[in-house]
Length: 111
Image (cartoon, rainbow, N blue to C red; front, top):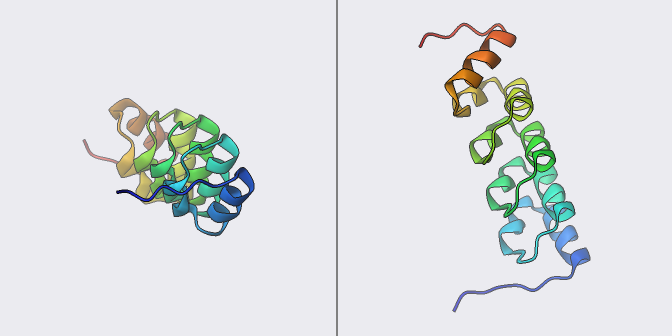
């Protein structure tokens, strides 16, 4: 039997604000709870059930490497990730977007 905690919205917000990874135990996620989790720890994005661009952007601003968990990589999100942490460029999935961001940030790449 798998443990499933049932938390009130206030309790969920308090929990994920202290430890973003606690989001994995929140059954009914709101955007506010997801936002609090990724602001506490960008890697908590991996537990967000319904990612919005705003939540993804907050996650990569907190930790550029969270780009690896972004389901829909927009230019704004990918650019913010690479600006936060240059190594995040490796997680850009679309070749055209990869090249566009590299050029915009004047990063020399060989393909």
